[in-house]
Structure formats: structure tokens, C-alpha cells
Image (cartoon, rainbow over all chains, first blue to last red; front, side):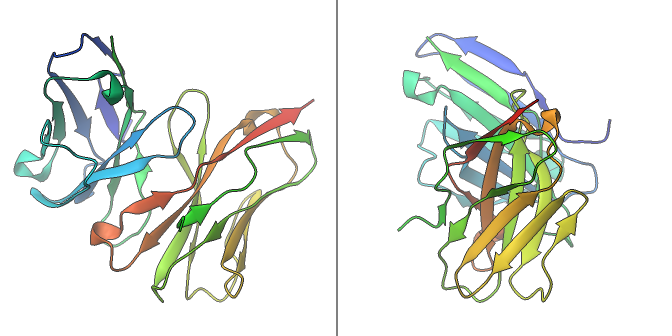
Length: 113
Length: 116
């Protein structure tokens, strides 16, 4: 399977705990995006990488959130001191250098209890 | 103002019939693009079709076609010959050239249920 993969698919955590999600983009794609989707809504942009450089962060991304993409390959999204409002589906997408289409992974569903 | 508006929260369609999903957008960028994605209950966003603002012809991909009316700022998705597997949420999204990395702005979605 050469699509975008995300791990874990589901994560249940207690409020105050830290969580980390991983995204593996399509191998030749240099652009990588994180989005958050709450129930009944469309996805909202969180952050964007071109290769290893994080070029934009949404104001939705509070200082409890951090994302990295070392070596321009996989990416991680960490949430520190989780809150119930962080419960959502976290979607990763990648895009090729010469195209506009973004291909999404299956998402990580986070539930904060 | 909302950048992407999908006014139909839910629709029923009879199997084998066509259905049109509405999408209107708002941008001052002359170079933009419009996407439609399908999201089944499994959660994955599946890319369906793309229309660039300078494309002269409406985009088509199999049973999907995009009715692009630039002056009206609308980009409606038409699904022909609906199948039971078309039951899903459908999202319209826009990229703007001045947005870093062509990030997408999504509408609120339309839920489609295909009846046998």
C-alpha cells in the first residue's frame, strides 16, 4: 500500500496526558499537512511542512501542540497536557511537488476522557 | 464570511439516479482551485475531482463531474448513476495561491444517503 498511513488509528487518553501521532506520507511527496476534524464539521488546517521545514501554523495550534518532520519524511504531531476539547480526528495529507491534490491518510481518532 | 458554503446538510437519492451537491465559495484570489472529497464512515478522505480557476472546461472523473460557474462562484458536484457505495459525507474545499502550501479550506459537508 503506497498511500498515506497514520498511527495509531485510535487513541484514548486521560486529560492531562501527552499523546503523539505519526504520519507517513506518500514517498515522493514533499508537502505534508495536518488537519483536525471535529464531529459534524469539515477538516480545519493545523500546519504544513515543505520537506522538513514547517512553513505555516494555524492559530488553532496552541502552544500545547507541536509538529515535526525530521529529514522531510514522516511527521509527528504531539499534544501535551491534553484537554477534552482536543478530542477529534487528526488527519494527515501529502501532496506532490508539482500537483495540487492532497491525499489523506485514514486519520487518528483521539478521545480525551 | 465563510470561504466555502455547503447549504445541504443531508440528501437522499434513489439508486441509479443523479444527485447534485451544492458548493459556493468566496475568494479574491484569481488563481485558486476547488476540490471535492468523499468521506465514508471509515473516516478516510477520498479525493474525487479538482477544478482550477483557469480551467476552461468542467472537470470530469468517471461518474463525477464538477459544474463550475465562475461568475456565480459555485462549484457543484454531480454524481451520476448513484450507487449504494456513494453513501457518505462529501466535502467541497478550496486552495488559494496566496495560502502557504496551497492549504485547503473545507466546507461543512453534505451527507448523502443512497436508497435502494
